[in-house]
Image (cartoon, rainbow, N blue to C red):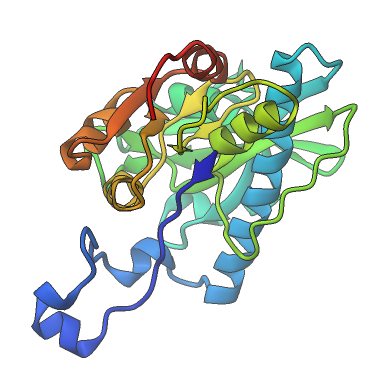
Length: 278
């Protein structure tokens, strides 16, 4: 089972002048998209490494639970990883806060948080209930428009799953300095493979997708680059989050088979029952 990642670097002056020199599928974005104002590269690296560590733990819990193991996994809210410096939330929300409610409605996962905030229009005020250590605090935050979709309200924070997770097996995953949460799905599939589930049938399978604690496969970024990488690596199939991620992957897949999934359970079933010839 293979994972794919995206390499991020600054463009060279020559690449700025001659775009055809850039690697295939590369996308140029403003620096603040990767490094928000006030965030250093070292801080960004620490954040993504922490996201990777949490992703590994969630993947272990999801995979082992799907395989019938006794797993304790209790979601406890949305952990704030980073706050953009140029949004109203920066004045009242800090990294390390755990958001447990929006407008009085309990939120236990990042997906629930996004859903509740998404009920608002950009510019609306939302009430966030934060847990800071042993204290609980309510703050009012003005939403802003999402850069990707100006009609969608956001508060300008990056969050991850806060949870109490206990697994019965020690699992170690070492990817060096690769960071971020988007390898959760391939992590879980590889754990299933090592524990006896035939998810490849002798084929080279790549996957990408963030995993929620309930096994839902969440959309990730960089599908253009990841699909091109999988295609160029001559893998036989590429498992991706259903929806817009799958649509984007198909645009760049060529003859590469794209398998869209909504959950880890679906991915496990599709791969273990496949009858492809490789």
